[in-house]
Length: 266
Image 1 (cartoon, rainbow, N blue to C red):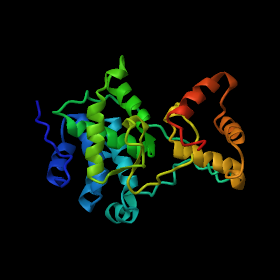
Image 2 (image 1 turned 90 degrees about the vertical axis):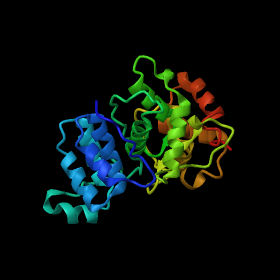
Image 3 (image 1 turned 30 degrees about the vertical axis):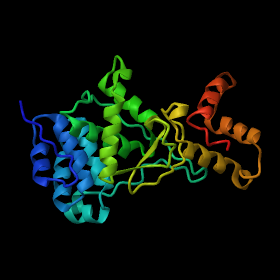
Image 4 (image 1 turned 180 degrees about the horizontal axis):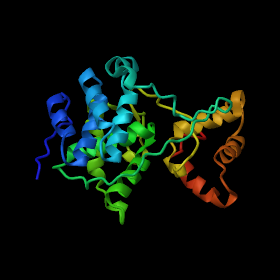
């Protein structure tokens, strides 16, 4: 069996990434594509381009995403006519200013262990790249469903939190100010260099998986200049409207407002 070297380090080793990009193991190639996108050099761009035709769908997706998130002028310089700058895929409606929520495509993930920290880091970074900003609770659910399809709650939270700390140390992700007494499920995590708040449709997210900062921004968009002057009842009515919340689900909203969305009515 091929030895899996640790390559998610603060100082990135391009030669190691190059070796991993040629691995017979599709998970290693996929993780290499995720990391190459963060490197963003001319050599990394060339290697990413070669991975866009990989036999594995997930490797191809990661390579294309990496190219899209690199400096587009540099990508154009390296790839010339082979690369067409993609149109914005945020699905933004110019009239409502509400974007579509783009969900991470589930792929099998390895069970987190001490030995495969690199794989955990790659998986979390890839999820955050696609869904940023994202709540810790949604991150947990996506990873749990991918690693433990039959029992997602088996996912060891401590290993996920440690991986997030590693990515934060590398300045690849950021965490919005949060109550330190709360678990990381209540965090809002974003990819460094991308907006900390994006107003989006609910999409595949549960209500408690929508960042409270996004909820506030969407209701502000709905109420306009009246947001700061209206009372809690009108804000709550607007909340129901924008997320299409049914009367039968109000008890669920109450639970979210008491926890994940506690800052909404303050």
